[in-house]
Structures are given as structure tokens and as C-alpha cells.
Image (tube, rainbow, N blue to C red; front, side):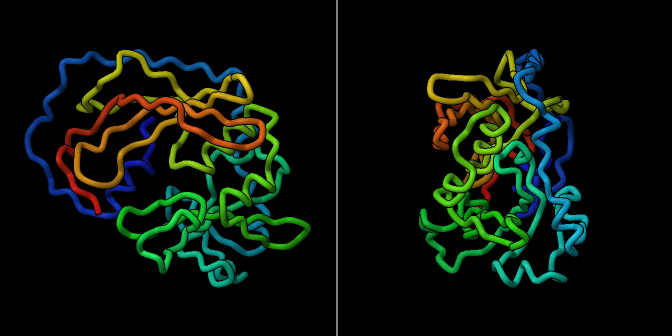
Length: 251
């Protein structure tokens, strides 16, 4: 299905006026959806965050019920988190430690490369980092370098998926459906898969243009995850867009 979080990136920042009338369809027919994730143990990619809940974090209903309120154990204050949530698809990482995502607002509005792991905001300098539990202690993983040092090497498709999701803004989609009225550009779309490649793994994910002005299309994106933990984008294909976002500016 279309990833709700991707659309929410826009709705969290702006409100879209109600659009009257029917949406015009493009001349494209609906694409063929190809599902082939046999190399993945999808169940094993489910993120392990139960230890945070057992320690006192409670689900607050935000972020599609993945949001956590950990104020009772002081995590927001300790690690300067604006939001804490259960990340998707990180269960295959090794070592298999409990992990949650912490988003924070930087005091540096220019958003330098040393700020966090992934930038989440547009003009608003919001960044992502992670909190783990190791040997009974809460520890911060605040940079890509720290993430790689802790979780590399990458030795399985599930680990490669975790690296690609954790270190980029992309997301998985295993059961894609495209809503009626969306403008389609691809004749064929493959759902998320991972395959071995020279020196590592090829990971097929999805992303969208969240910021700036334009039509905010969705993309199919391929990454190569090396066994040493480097994640590099190798291709990006525009696949569809929501006509209601046409010409929209998001800051």
C-alpha cells in the first residue's frame, strides 16, 4: 500500500485546500505490480522495541501508533528528543538490540552534515538518531559513523535492509496498491526486495519528494549496501504522484 508516512510528511507541514471535481487520470494504464521478496525473512525485520515499553514507554497514538511517550523514564530529556517512535524494518540488524528512533530539532538551521543520521525536516532542521539498549543501559547512536561501527558488518539480506532504511529517507512497501486517481509513470513496479550483489546487497525501496515546490512524486530507489556498511544510491525512477499535490510548495 502507499506509505502513509510519506504523505504525512506533507500534511504535517501544510494544509491542503479541499479540491473540487474529479481528478483527471493520465494516459497510463495501471502498472504491473511484481512481488518478489523471497530472499527476505520479512518477519525477522520487525523492529524490537518491547524492552522500551516494558521499561515504561507507552504508545501515544502518533505516527500510525508507532509513537512512544518515554517521559516516565526520561529519554526525551536525556537525549533531547522531540519525538520517539518505533522504527520500521530494523529487526534484522546485528547485534539484535532493542532500538527506537529519536527525532530532534537542531539549533543549527543550516543543517550541517554532522547533525544526526538523516534529515527529516525541510526548512525546519529536524534530524533522526537512534537509541538502543545495550547491557541494560540506554545509549545514543547519533551519526552514520556510530551506526556503522555498532552494526557492521552486513552479512544478510535482513541486515542490508535495516542499513538502507536506517541510513536514508526511503521506506519499504511489500504490498503496493496505487489509489485511484494517482498519475502513473511506470509500466511495472517491483515491491521491496533485497538481492546479493558484488560486494554486498542491492536493496529496492521507495521515497518521495517531500520538500520544495513541484508535484511531489514517489520514486522507486535502489541502493547498494556494502558488507562494510556503506549505503549508496544507484538508481531512482519516478513511478507515480498524487495530482492533488501538483505545484505544491513545502518549506
